Length: 107
Image 1 (cartoon, rainbow, N blue to C red):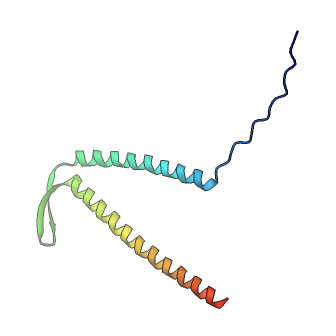
Image 2 (image 1 turned 180 degrees about the vertical axis):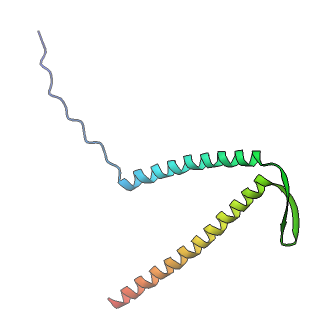
Image 3 (image 1 turned 120 degrees about the vertical axis):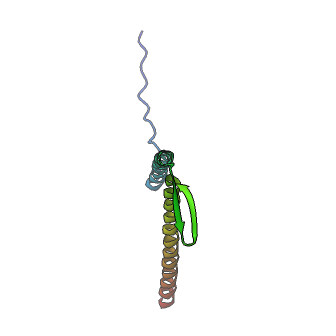
């Protein structure tokens, strides 16, 4: 004798994460993968360019492998860029605070 089947139970709707948290974790994972790939390329570059070369900076003269010298130059450029960006963010933050304070006084 066949048994009556129960009606299908509706599955609860999947909880939706806010769009920004999904995007943020995805962007972080993508940045991690891109960073690891970049590090592999940098390592290959440094290992292939290990011929020492004379470098002169102001009054100092020293010998470094070409790959290491290029790596130091890239790090210096990144630090300068980060410094300029930090100063710009501080200036913009101050401007926003002053504008908010002036708007609060006007009301």
